[in-house]
Length: 143
Image (tube, rainbow, N blue to C red; front, side):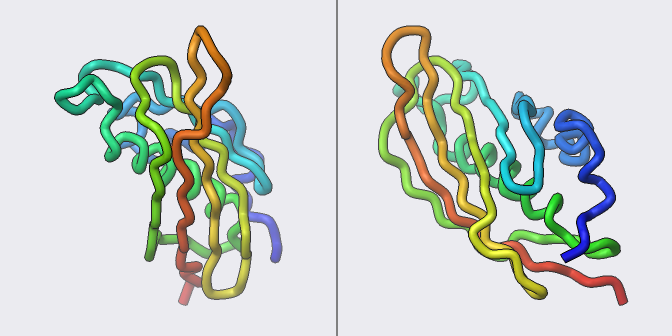
């Protein structure tokens, strides 16, 4: 598969292609075809009534990371669109940052499958695996 021309863009420039990510507060750390890392800080406005980071915020983080990963693996002239996303939550996030790391599992002509792991990084204590997402992206070839 020929590399997409946007591979030369910075992580921040790639994230800027998704205005909703900025609205939610997602920050980009790494954007390569084989690994994308994004970060979202815990904040009260992103929580449920119990002070736990909302699952929708975590899914948004995973979706953005996987979307960029799929995008970086597109052939020239193609676009991508999420067609399925499955997320498992393992632990509540009550503080710190959540780091999403997305990696391709399958890169084909018609679709890509991206795996994203979510980790809670807190000031005190070990990094904790809080979620796992698998996402299928359609590869939309120009007509």
